[in-house]
Length: 46
View 1 (cartoon, rainbow, N blue to C red):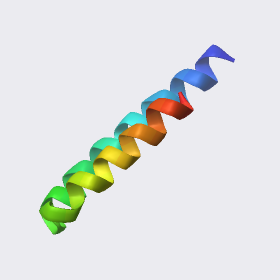
View 2: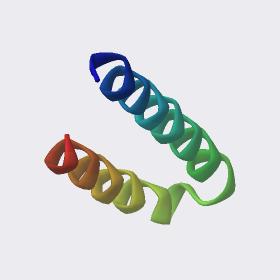
View 3: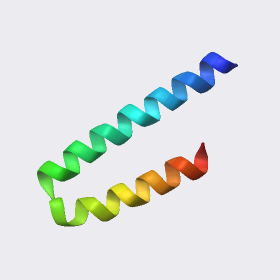
View 4: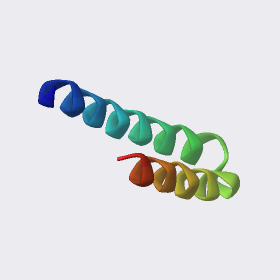
């Protein structure tokens, strides 16, 4: 069970990093609010 939770944590971190880099490249203005919302949802989910 711990391995499953660890894999979910790693996946969420990698996904958030990917979204951060993608939004910073495509839309820097709207990317900041999107990242803050994703980080908030990720922190509350974990």
